[in-house]
Length: 92
Image (cartoon, rainbow, N blue to C red):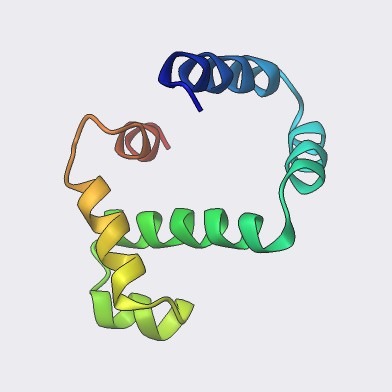
């Protein structure tokens, strides 16, 4: 996909769900994503929250069953303090 179109799609996606009720967003996500995609996204979210709370990688791996590669990928993103993931966790 062209980068400009990709960026536009992300912006439209965010706008589409930003003012919706939780139940509507949940229905939308479960409709548009496969079970596996939703599982992967929510796993990354859980790992991010656990890293943010200073859980060890070993504890995250034990609790979630995630691979060290998945934890490493999320950790790499978490190191970028201006990353959207970190910004959202800071506001929670």
